[in-house]
Length: 222
View (cartoon, rainbow, N blue to C red):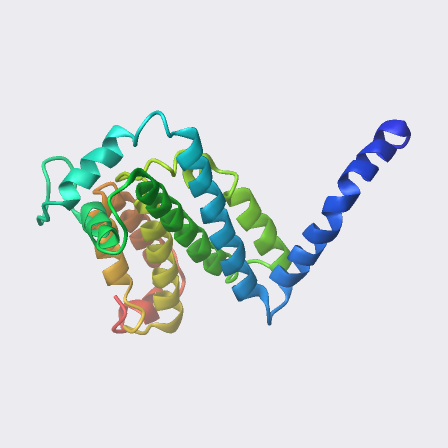
């Protein structure tokens, strides 16, 4: 496509293309890619935290988040509606930060960024560097990691837990080493929300149907 509209688009976008290209170069450079990804995700968390603070200033935190704040003040091995991991995590967070609305949004977005970083590490096991960048960029567009992620609840807590469980399971399957404690990540996922049984069932099926299953199940990893 050519003509005045395309020329206008090129002129408008030209100032942004250079920085984007340099960022992609850094994210695909083996030396710089990890620290660049961490810096990008840190900026992502800060920007979305500011959005949450400003856009929801007149609303207060969502009811599920407020319930978790209350539970976090009274630690237990379980609660009437959900398992305890999210409350434990929030309790630890409030040992470092004040119990304020902005702190809840910061926790939500730092945790979402953690899930994105684990997914980034997972992508690197299967995709070329350029495709890893595209995959991460697409994942940041999923509302679960931004608009919905600002509501820190028992669904949001599964993001990083499921990603970590999948990554640890894959490393465990590849190395057949008990060092990659997939069982610990799986246990944490179950303590996040009992829906995690569906993830564990999927991983069990994956282990059984893989052609390396005999070697894997004779090792210490399972």
